[in-house]
Length: 508
Image 1 (cartoon, one colour):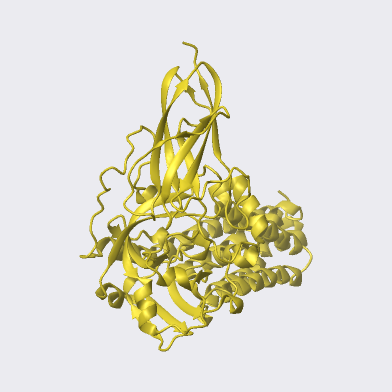
Image 2 (cartoon, one colour):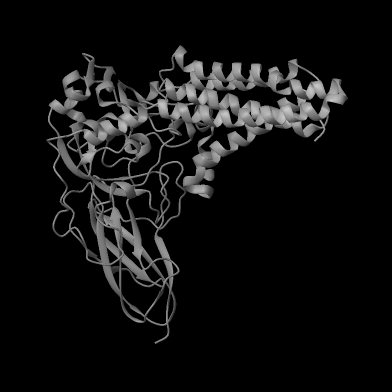
């Protein structure tokens, strides 16, 4: 490996770049800053990505969208580190321009985060100083080998030794920062020790299960509940530090602490949530027992002015949604939830407090880590997803799904019990119909549901004859709304169409 060749210079750039990332990450952890610069850049990319593009990406890669984004940023950084190292062969100034450019991107990404402060720039500046100081020191042996060929062998050994030591040190620094930065672990421990005396352990109501094997359970366990958010790094908020500010078009502003909220007394309800990105027959839907404080009571207390028509909700990570005021003040159990299925909210589901609004898709209602309510008007605000092509209001559409049989299944001939789920929150399901091979619709059996805000299980029996078959399903709402078979994409206000599965029946 000759010092004048490209490889050692590229390696010098990579080692320097990684060391800068490590010191930046370590400082962010030690200061308990939620976003390291890389995470901040990733979340900035998410905010700048047009809605249609984001939806296509999610449709292709699913839950891998965020890991792939971070991986892509890291690959880009490695390319820039390599470029800086190669530039150092002929110039001292040009690599510094690379470091300054990368740092500028990091600073912008950090500063546009909600609630950004000057201290949030410290990790970026530490990384920049590491880059600027380290590359000349690391490449000094390579330059010496060029200027003095007789020293080539010794300088090569010096370079490899220094590069190896720096690589190990970078890993050690990042690990130390993770150990010292115990903020997130402390929040996890706070949640574990938190006792909510008013929370009732959930008991699924009698008759809620239809009794068909492999139909999704009526109550969705926390670990199985779908996760959709824009946060690369989940906010870690201590209950003692949480505040909710209610302001805007109100008679009197209100700021609530976590203890203030709990002291008001909790309401509890079964509520089904689903994402507007859920495809027909998809799994971005779940049903849980939520405990919290009714939002209607809080808005009544602050005195909402008559010309207001929405509440702009803001999350700790800066995500926003605009929720119709009527859905927060009517009889439905719209709440600031503190518990899910009888336990304090999981961090990834919004601990310590999130909002729940039955009958609306999450993109206009379900704000995790909620910290701000601004009573306002739709015409005066722009929320995260509505800026990206989704509709303003977001009422849940009637939907149904076949869980049994699964698409592509092979089953035995004879009577076949089929089943699944149907939902139209805040309206309820009056009936479900199934059709085999494009034939006539036949009524299915319904399990019981305690309220109109939850899904309901359904079941039916068909005569499975040998061969290939298709089964489709549609739901009928309590308002007489019959689920349409017209196929529509999830953008701008939710997918439509009849869920259809293809299956085969073995020969007798």
